[in-house]
Length: 261
Ligand SMILES: Nc1ncnc2c1ncn2[C@@H]1O[C@H](COP(=O)(O)OP(=O)(O)O)[C@@H](O)[C@H]1O
Ligand SMILES: [Mg+2]
Image 1: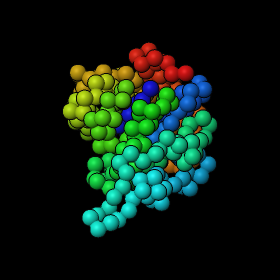
Image 2: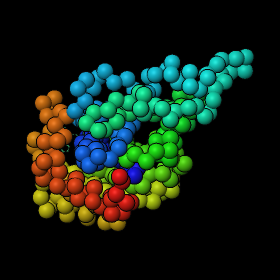
Image 3: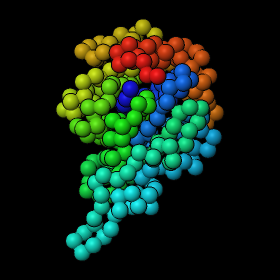
């Protein structure tokens, strides 16, 4: 199962991506969490002991040069468009509580945009491997867009989860993302409402996105608000009402796409 999580900044993409990843990992499913947001904080949210020590893939320039065989010659730079990447998750992505984490890094936006350079060839190969070459559950924490997906990789994404909160701007982002998803041929675009305080919030979101499928209403919980302290306390979060809603979301995913084993 491959899930991409997107939405406006601050709506709770990382929180929900981390919660889903933990939930699957607890069930003994192999999970790769992909932090594709240049402003990466999935590691901290997942409770990795030393998140700042994790080296983003795009910073591994030597590895990228070695794998792509990048060489500068008279006519420019020569490199392989098909570098070996199948060992990258196991060798270069740290695991914590059953979740393997791949941090793409700040330069990845450029790489994802399809520039002709060794880095983008490497990233593309890695994305293709993660999305097509493995049975793991892959959960991608994206930025407020789906720039990392090409038409090719979008086909492997089972569901694009657009996180919104009760606020007009996040709904606008959702509508824009859906248009982009349509252009990429991504069929299943779901909305996960987050920070929902009451029925008025539910109504606001349902009315604001009348033709989108809202698959979860995750409650606002003041103890979720992180500012250093609550960081990484995903398990505490999952034990409460937020967890109940994430569990529903997982049931829905399993029903729709088949429970991963
Ligand atoms: N359901 C919730 N209730 C209260 N606060 C939340 C909830 N979900 C996320 N938050 C808080 O909102 C802030 C932004 O969440 P985050 O997951 O980092 O968003 P994003 O990845 O979309 O930028 C964080 O401080 C987070 O703890
Ligand atoms: Mg985030």
